[in-house]
Image (cartoon, one colour):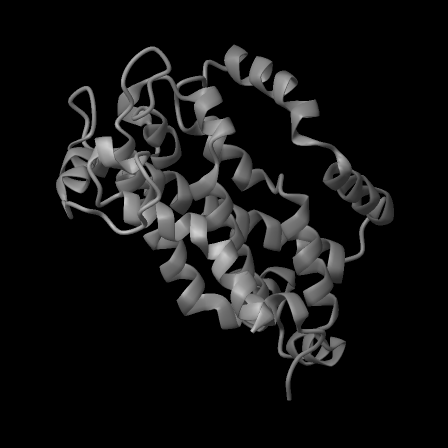
Length: 267
């Protein structure tokens, strides 16, 4: 019972937001009633219509584009780097791996100013390049470390057998390691999707054109510090923007747990 009560307590803010999305603006912060007095879908209609002539559907498509490119970049580049660290021998391997681990300890806010200056000089500001291109350069140390640990658990005998059949490093990576590391790849995909979809600071920092806004930045437009905020539309679109996250987690949670916990190849 205690766990159920704690779960309800943690879910209450989410349930309140969904309930408020069906209330009129004047009713949202008036009283303590959980259920709407006047049930309405106007907030969803108004929210989807967007602001300044740009519909919220445009923000969804922009977010899907950024998320898709980020997933492709992370899966390909991080898996290549992880394969090199886990299965290949090259000069300064241990030193470079240590440097990669050090990057995990650097707070994001330490590097954000140098990165912004660099991207500004490259004239990448107000484009999707700062949000997507670094993903193709294996800049996510967490995913590299995750895949390295997973790939190290793959038996060497499989590589030796593939090598006897004439497989080189490239074929071995693509046709042997990648299929066996599928749980780790799916885990990388899920985390990249969630983190990129929910990312607000980075997208707000680099995007200023409303036509390029993503869902996270688009939601901010419904609040106005100098005037009246459209709380109903904000809650409606916030609830709607959570649907992709729930769908991804529900359908892929088994792979997410397996990718993190698996310590070897199942026979």
